[in-house]
Length: 60
Image (cartoon, rainbow, N blue to C red; front, side, top):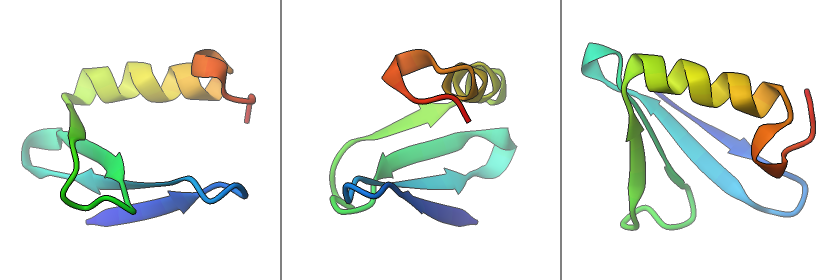
């Protein structure tokens, strides 16, 4: 299963939930480009960082 997320400025990412709990993230406008693949624990840490305002992202 995959989901796409879009910001007002047009930046889009696609998140795909893979077998074994891994998660793939890529630029949805560049389907053949590079992707990040996270192990389950890495994904948890990454999303907590995003929600906490890390990586220059606004807090949600």
